[in-house]
Image (cartoon, rainbow, N blue to C red; front, side, top):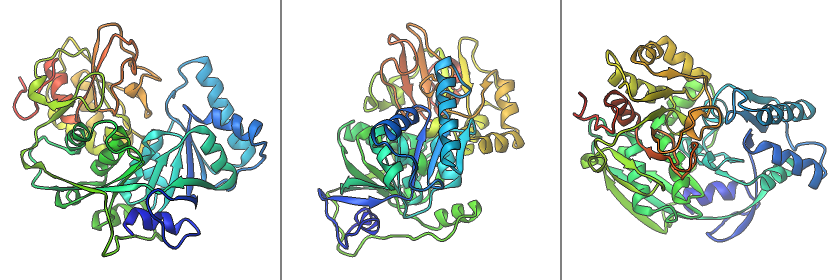
Length: 417
């Protein structure tokens, strides 16, 4: 078996599993956020008619999409989640502490685990060698009740990445390139396994970026094999006692794709699909109205550090709004202590409380008719951040920071004024 099959088998009664097989798997954690939890609560209570979750330490709730409460409806949803958590005795409830996936990675995920979440970007946790996937609210409600779920074993694809990373080219550029090649349907219900020396050279934060966006190609799981970098991250987080799985010698993959990052340029996904990806030169000079640095894709300290290094001593253009949102309170504090928040504020940017923020406009950053947003988030569907007549472009933190200075899409490798 390959590593995906081995982790699934370890969570099931089966000794061997194969692609296409439907299996029942035990879950290590079930996460839901304020965009999805209330529907799951209603199903849990009214349709499943269940009184207790399977394990109050393994059901995790996060308020991040509409935090601070951006409407009466959001406030009511948050109160509903708080009451459910209190009634169920849930141990882990995060109220305005940051984005769900960042918090899960900071505090919960272990290599070799199997986790489901009521959010499509749950696949982020593959950066630590866990299997994690998003599911709908009905499946999540069942998971709350049973601690188990049905799952089909996916085919696995290997994406091997070699070469030396050029200056101002990052994991975001690589995953945008891959999605552009695969298309938004190219990995539907498959596991994407990222390996090779260029992946091994990445920090966990950048591995998270790659795994986070695997769902944009339709993937069920994303996965990076744990290594010394993973071990160091887990040791710093104080989490031990995990199991690392590896491929069998005769493991099978449906397909292998190979990339060399040495000649990779910054990439842009242009409206209105994540697979509409081109080299930055195609869009250089496109005037932008708003920029966003943050989200579960690129709101970590390393992302803020990259952007701050470009912004230091410079001012953003007078024609733009630049919103910076750290992915968690720990990231915020780290950025504060490192002086990054001062750099952003002095440049003219707005720094907001940890959360999803302008990723989809749930708590701010809404676009008006005809406006353009350049963002480090993961989706650019029509109307995702406000007006359906606006445009959303996806890019790396370096591209966003450089573009904030010039007021238009700018190549950070030499396009700064």
